[in-house]
Structures are given as C-alpha cells and as structure tokens.
Image 1: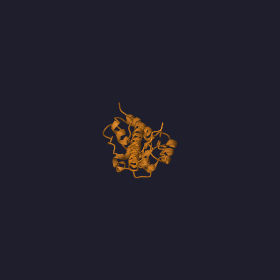
Image 2 (image 1 turned 30 degrees about the vertical axis):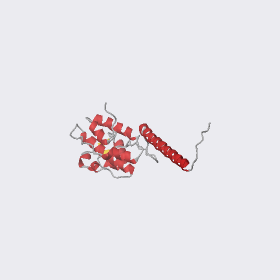
Image 3 (image 1 turned 180 degrees about the vertical axis):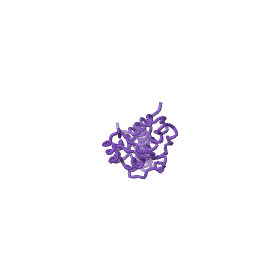
Image 4 (image 1 turned 90 degrees about the horizontal axis):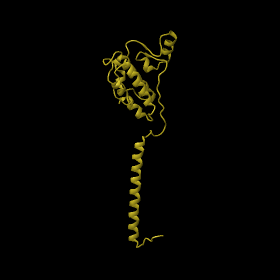
Amino acid sequence: MISRPQTLKEVAAQSASLAEFGLHLRDWLHELRRASSRPQVAAAIADEPPLLAEKFRQGHVADAWLGAYAEHLAGRLGGTAPAWAFAPERIAGEPLFDEGGDTPALRALALARSPLAFKRRNIFTPSVDLPLRLRAGRPAKSPEEKRRVNAERQRRFRKARQLELIALRKFARKHGMRAEAKG
C-alpha cells in the first residue's frame, strides 16, 4: 500500500502518469494541511524530486508544476525556494492553461490571476490550491510524541522527588530527628 506523499519528491516518485501525478499532488496538498510549522512545510519541498519528463508522456508538465509549487510555497513561508525549482527542466516549453482555458475569458482570467511562481514556468491557472494554515505557537505533536514526552517528564519528576526524600532523610539523621509515623 502506498501512503500519501509527504514531500514533492515523494509525489514524483509515486507518479507513473500525468493522471497519477495529479492525484498524488492533491494528496500532498491534503497532507500539507496538517503542517503546523515552517520547518515542516520547508521539509516538504526541500528535496529535489526526480524529473518526470522521461518517465511518462507529459512528464514535463508535472516537472513544471513541481517547481511552481515549491517556489510558491517558499514565498508563502517568507523563505527562499530550493535551487532545484529554478532548473530549466522545470519550465514548460509552451503555455499551459489549467481549468478549461479553452475560452478567451478563462484564459484572460488565468493570465491575470496566476501567481508569479506559476507564470515563470509558463503555467496559467486562475486559482492555486495551497491549504497552508500555519498557527502561532509550538508545532502540533503526534499522540506518540506526546506520550513519550509525558513519560520522560514523569521520570524526571519521580527522580527529583526521590532525591528530595534522600536529602530529607540525611538532614533528619544529621540533626537527630525521628520520623514519626502518623496514623
């Protein structure tokens, strides 16, 4: 069973056709919704995906989309896009119009609304799905990570109480105090 891709590199690795690429890209965008910190999002675009132009027909289209999303996402993070996103192989040779760019009105809309990262790669789309909602504060933790951190906190707490008890017993012996049992 193939899991949802977490990175653009995984999107490319799991794609054997343009149709599969579209499905994997949508799955990646869905997984991107779970990201809660800039480092998590940056990791999703850091590694260079393999070129798809030679892997399947219209792979050059997928290569351009990968570069566009990497640059666009980096811009949203306020960072620098990875160098691989600017490779000449990541630019479509001919203009690509998304979402029914058949009519002049839809083409004009796509030309006007396409983000710069997509325009640079000859991709024109009236809307770009980028479900990025970073929240202020600490990144979200998995239940497994929460259990591990809580268990470690409990170990430290118990160790500190044990050391306090040892110190109190030493103090009591030094000063001739007796511990009285209360019933």
